[in-house]
Length: 464
Image (cartoon, rainbow, N blue to C red):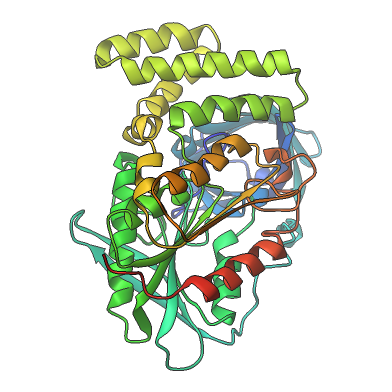
């Protein structure tokens, strides 16, 4: 679950130029600063240049690993600087210092307004997040960019297939991203978990297909209009593509899903007997309307608030979600949400919040119960959760075991990994403020467990 993150800075595109009110060559160059949001420090870098049409810029969110985010306009009036980014509902307004070395101002998004001082820096001095687990080429295996269709959705999907050396046929897996628009590496906070995971598994003799979400990067389609069920059809199309590859054993194709992806994996396996196995990473077996309030409670606690404040926050979130689930009249729902939200957030945030809360994905996620599908899964299942996960409660992850037992599955293993967070990093508190500052992308024991388990449990699925 990545709903809690206040930036949505994936799915990048080409920067746009703009007509500034008063061109100011003195602000051309690279500017860097950091915003603090609920204890999370996010470093931003703006690259401002001049074109024949005026000033143009792009932004990097360094700790999220997002580069080249388009800026729609840069303007300067006197010493006032305004940078607008409507694609992420963001803007910066600041004042250039007399020596043109800093710009002091505010960063604004629907989540609020935050102080931000930008300092002029050399472009090559922009810091990169250190991620020592990222693999470095050349790789001892084959790597191929691929495309394939989802005929039912009439879209083309794009991804990367990594193949072990040799002829095969190989055991293979499709990686399934978590919620939010994700590229094929599931890139977040400068980490590329699926790149690290695919590299490790391929070196262990397992072919891996990782795919950009629909509407993200090189995949077609409309992400905003899709639900979890729609994303499941994209994964099924990926499985069909793997079956067409000569180096892939069609009887040993499995699924590895993270967070929402760990809900999609059993959804598919419950109706497709050709799935040989599934791995659920940070999965759960309760509807979103139960998951999210508990997530709120855990995050409030992780932020250092009292248990009473955490319980109150969870109760308020639950009441809000129940309103979305039960109110069927769109007009009435809009009215009630406006009344409720206007009392707890600034006016300019109400509209974007309602747009999110009433989106097709969100409403589907609130009501979908993963347990029935889990009870129908007959192939081997590995479910891993972190003991310090503050986005999926340990109690909710343990429901996975109960659902599998109720369905009579005899081939599953569930483990709570000590000291690991939602991203399976070795963590101190498990709070999301740690995600970007932890250099580790995935704990080595998780990589080892997933690979060794697949090697032992990737036999062809039994036919009923």
